[in-house]
Length: 169
Image (cartoon, rainbow, N blue to C red; front, side, top):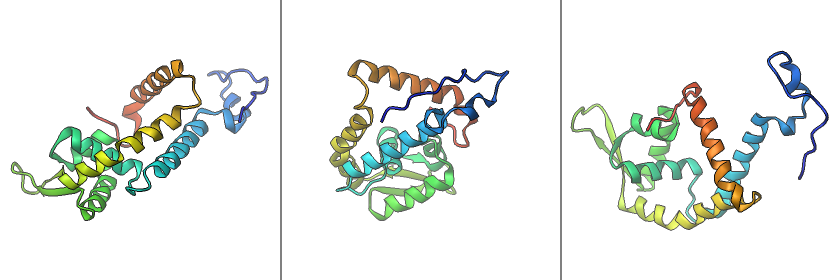
């Protein structure tokens, strides 16, 4: 689907209504949300056999890369608030993908860690998740994909502190 843009001046500080006058389908927030929805659908389709969501996959990947980690640090690593991370951990713990134990430094804090069952699930879903990423970018010519990812990273990094759950690390 190609969206042609009407002849409307670019939005400026002097004309904030410029975005309001543009079709919804060319606004950055709309496009980013739609691309996210599309990627989630592709991920769920590709990873259906393992029954993992993109967020669960992110948490498992972070645990694989970070080792045993306190849930607050994990929430900062994946850009989710603590409550959501705690809920994801509970679901992954039920499936034996993750284990929690008290921190040796502070017994009130829990460390989450990937189990061998979780590591095996991550390995099984690796190619499927990769296909989802490739399918998300497939409409772009190969020579523009890395640039697109760099531009996305720039946008995210430049506004990271404005997020309710900024990524740290």
